[in-house]
Every structure is written in structure tokens, then in C-alpha cells.
Image (cartoon, rainbow, N blue to C red; front, side, top):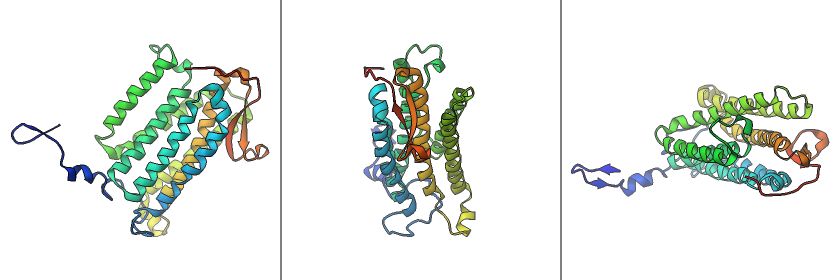
Length: 282
């Protein structure tokens, strides 16, 4: 709450509140030339590349439905939320508004929180956490605090989100260090490789812009969008498969690829080859 000169509570003016929606009100500006292809779209290629979210998300919702039906229908929320990430990414890059930036980054934060809640292994829960319900409550509290603190220094949000990704990679390393299944390891290496390519594009666009401008190739952040969506599809399927082996082993989960499993390339998903016995789970 803001106090005026007389110590009386006052509220931000309409103009100040509207300012967060204004074009280019964000402090973040990516390498792509602004308004190059449209008078109404600030970063045209970054905006168009965000539509990849609307292509991959429905496919993953469909492919993972048998697993979600057996394990937990909340699994669908991951890819429903990814649709919202896409919407907010389009809005952000179209306007470069402060509100667009916050919606874009906070939607990613809540996707990560959802993934932690669903798939973080029970054996790695803190000692004071006894079940997944309590763990979910802890994750929600931390995410709410993180959401509020993200307004303190918005320019640091993207770096904080990438730190979560590093923790996920560490967790995958711990889980897979004794794994001998070549199909699982291949998916793990593909997930890591896609993430490395994606983060390389993100960093290069952020810190090497002058170099790419000389080459007249300022589209790395847009390429990041494409790579990170595919990397998310790979990594989330891998984590879900590891979870399925622990939580629903009777369903005999198997890694497969769409559109053709024989290719071992495409979008990975979990096929259940055993007898399923759908029941309510936390």
C-alpha cells in the first residue's frame, strides 16, 4: 500500500496500472529487431515461434492419456498449462509488456511446480514430509512465495527458472546412474541434448546479440521456443516413465514414439502393456 504526503493510504493511479500493459514496458528486450515485420507485433519471429506450444501440447495430451488415466489425471494439467505458457509467450513477444513478461515467466514457474508435485520421487522427500499430499502443499507454498518475490527483480526471473532446470537434470542423473535400459538412456541423452541446445540459443541471444546482428540472424530466441517445447516433451515423458515404473509397475509401462515407434524418434510417450486397474491416487 502506498501512503501520500499526509500518511493517508492511496492506490496507484490508473495510468500507472495501465502502464504494465503498455508496449515495450518490460525491461527485457530480445535480440530480434523490433517491429521489423509488423507495425503491431514487436518481435515477429519470437511471437510466431511461440505457436509451437499449440502444436505439441494437444499431441502430448492425447499420447499421455492412457498413462494419466491410470496414474493421475492431473498429469494432463502439465500440457494444459503449457498451452497457457504459449498464450502468454505470444502476448509477451507481441507487446514486450511488463505484464506479458510476468505472465510468461510465472506460467513456466507453475508448470515446474506441477511437475515437482506429480513426479518428484517419494524416496527423495525431505524427512519431515510423510506423503505426496504434504509434499504438494510444500511445493504450492514455495511457488506462491516465489511468485510474489518475482516482482522484486523481474529481470532475474529467467535465470532463477533455469536453476530449477539444473536441479531437474541433477535428479535425473541420480535416478539413472544405475540404469542399463538403452531405450531409457537414449531418451535421457536426447532430453539433455535438446536442453543444452535450447539453453545455448537462449544464452547466445541474450549475451551475444551484437555478433548475431552482424550476421543478420537474430532468431535464436525463437529457436529456443521450438527446442524447449520438444525438450519438455522428452524430459517430462522420461520422468513420467520413471514414476510409472515405481508407482504403477503392474501396468508394464513402455516407452514408445509417435508417429512411428520403429524410428525411435519423434514425440515419446508411455504405452501401458499390462493390466490396468484405474483407481484414485494422491
